[in-house]
Length: 333
Image (cartoon, rainbow, N blue to C red; front, side, top):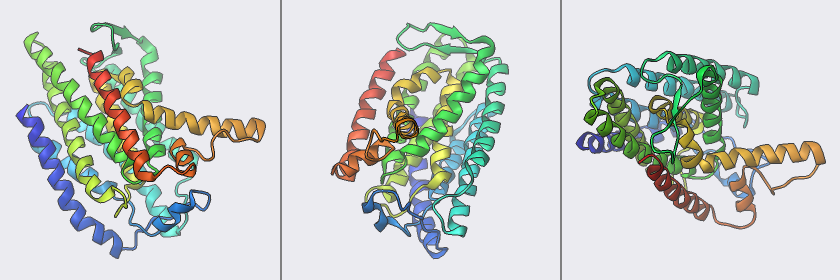
């Protein structure tokens, strides 16, 4: 338990330090956000706010994880490599937006090629791992496992790409993506602690060592998001950009992949799912019927246009996420 607290605290203070140094630097470099013309009119005042602040999260996450990880580093390197890989894709996207001063960076096909490439590597690595393999833990089933066999690879690719893009889509209001992800990662830290204790008592030392370090990784992610919120809550002094949102989605996904808890994302990440579904429904409805279901998608912008204050939406999302994560913790006990 102590190491979890140390990882959270270290990551939090590293993120604070990185923010106090990085935010003014991003301002001086003129790394300002380009706001979409078709977005909510209230967001036009956010134009010029420094972006690419996801670097702050990545610095804190990486440093705290490496400081407190112990024993076998295999899964730590794996988790960090995947997270940084997606962060790099996001950084390229952010840099194009900044340099060309437009609201769109990489083309859609360029993003998806990079995302799929990493996801396929992740899926095959996990499938061939003697500890991870093709079995998933089923929530509310008393420890029952579901062996996907060869279907594990496409399933994991889908989970990875979906999670990355869902976090990217929910990153539309000050503090929303970082707040919801912080709660998710805290919940997974608690769940991983329970798994670690179970593996230790049952003599599964190799599995316990891997889960222990993923517990540290998840705790460091919690602290990094908490520290970043110091600069990202309304009115945001910095945005995470795709550098942060793609990395956060990847970090959460890789935690569930190593712990075989991918199915739990449907519960803890329900608001990510609903955000993506709202976009799919909006696009599909407009293409088929030339009618929109929501005033704007993702759905948090719909609430904004109905007059709900941005801070109230973020608070509501975070409260719902806390409840969902408590249910998720109960589901694997």
